[in-house]
Length: 299
Ligand SMILES: [Zn+2]
Image (cartoon, rainbow, N blue to C red; front, side, top):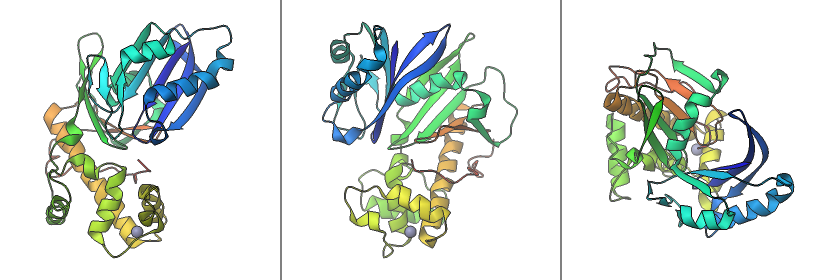
């Protein structure tokens, strides 16, 4: 049995799989709210308790976790969470000899080759180059980015913390947005916009006096409400927020494409979307960034 986990700033998805001839079949899965646990080991402990009946006489022989943050020497200080996740303590907690920690976008990068075609949505058709470099970006609690390089036999995944690089405004409105955000943050990164929390920031930038119920509740996440109201058009500011957010997402996809020349389709994933979406590279993306043709779901 193999234990796999996607460890995010908002939620952790853990699952047990059986493996036969390279094919994984899920046996038991569970979702946990990350902020309800002081340490990741406690989630693993609770999962192990719940999973015991599904294990039967079998044992977990290996475990792997994708975590938001840079993994250095088997340890990672989780981004957007007060956790340090460490391979040695997980080996001890799980009593499993093989535990691997990966940057979350690194883990997503490894999954690309295993996803069936129906898990992809082509936004802009292009002509992929066999063995071409791939770029991956995914907005969730943060903004993950990674690069996939063909080594002649398979894709190697290069993780990155590119989401923390400086936001570059693209229009007069976005220059105003940068000024607005500089009053709140010492450094305005792409991630501050292209993440769940960015929705409220953009809404407040566009119309400071228009607020919604989730804005008042410190425990609520305004992103799903803004997305819902934007899609059902019950709030004009929410619709404009989605448009601005999506345009900035497209611009950063274009920037990433320019940096790595991903002629084998850069991919975009969303935190709660099952689908990855491929965006074809555009040589003129600095002036005409590829735009996502679908509205963002709750990151
Ligand atoms: Zn609104």
